[in-house]
Amino acid sequence: MIILGIETSCDETSASVLKDGKILSNVVNTQLIHSKYGGVVPSLASKNHEKLINYVVDKAIDDAKINLLDINAVAVTQGPGLIGSLMVGLNYAKGLSIGLGIPLIGVSHLEGHLFSGQIDNNLRFPYLCLLVSGGHTQIWKLDSFNDYKILCTTVDDAAGEAFDKGARILGLKYPGGPEIEKASTGGDINKYKFKIPFVKSNPLNFSFSGLKTALLYLSQKFSKVELDKELSNIAAGYQECIIDSLLKKLSLVVDLHHLDNILIAGGVSANKRFRLKSSILEKEKNIKIHFPDFKYCTDNAAMIAMVGYKKMLQNDISKLDILPFSSIEHA
Image 1: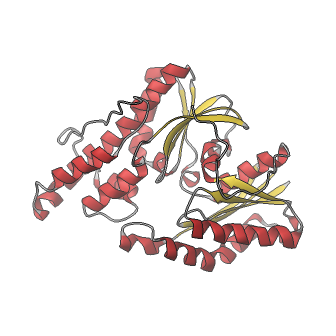
Image 2: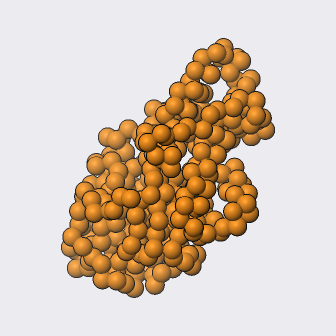
Image 3: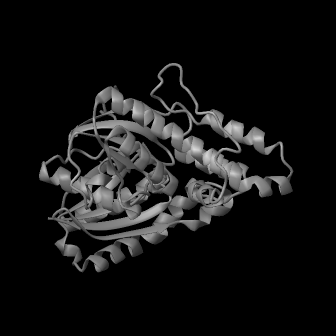
């Protein structure tokens, strides 16, 4: 069984070919045009997807050394994401589905991240997934492929958003995660301490809006020259607080649900400091923490193809719905 995956939810145009559960190719083209604006511009994103989609799909097919007619189904991200960007991928996938006479499988972008740990990794159920990306910070409990629910989420900004906005405050480029990680190299994590946010209504939930505000107030105390001089220390302290907040809530959920099998997925999971501190928590709690390969952390079509493949195996091909996750149970 050969599945073509297509992902265009935000600013990555990606296509992937999967055969019998194995990724044959995964092409990701990240739109660099947004960096000068400090964030993704939706209209530019959709226009760039239109320009890139043909090339990216053709390259994925060529890299996989297959023919277009070999494809048995098309899996495409149906949401959540930028509506204009999503429509480019959806319409392209619909065209292929109709033209080739093959099934079209709508996949939630979040499902892709939740099951990204299944790529090149026999991750057993049940497991917890800490999903940390630019738009989402959540912990999920997955009992099987078709049985999963959200346990906690952010009440305001996502962790990736906190990195992006923090980078803008510090005068760094977009995307903020890699920039703050780079700026923090050699910095003293203890020189500028940030307080881990606490949500009274639900101690398991995340909050990063106040942390971002604390960074803004701190930065305003310095002149431009002083801020540049202290940049590595401030970035290190800010990054440390985001990571500690994520791992503290994860630790609480582990204790509550007594699960020792964990997946940390999403763009922020590529952060090396995050991975290092996760390994420390792993030893302290006697749990196993899995990370996707770096190339499957950020938005990519391989994870979409993987979910599409599993849906095909279970004959779970429902009507395409661009109102994603409408039936997901909230704990």
